[in-house]
Length: 101
Image (cartoon, rainbow, N blue to C red; front, side):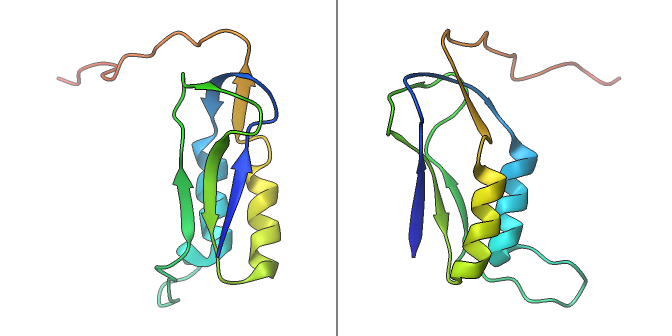
């Protein structure tokens, strides 16, 4: 089953909280709390936008693939506000931040 999270307003994706998206995926069952626990390979988060993308209110931002409604509620809490919508396009960040020698 899939639940889509959408943009609350028009603007640009200014920031995506990767930790929140990761925690949401974990809540759905895509991660382990201890070695030996099983992983559900059918669940997780699919991003539909990236930082800097122009979005309209109601446009899909991400999809939560889940099997268990009780796990979905916790994942939605993590996704709430994980994508920040801003008025102006964010300044692009370089793909390579530096070199280690």
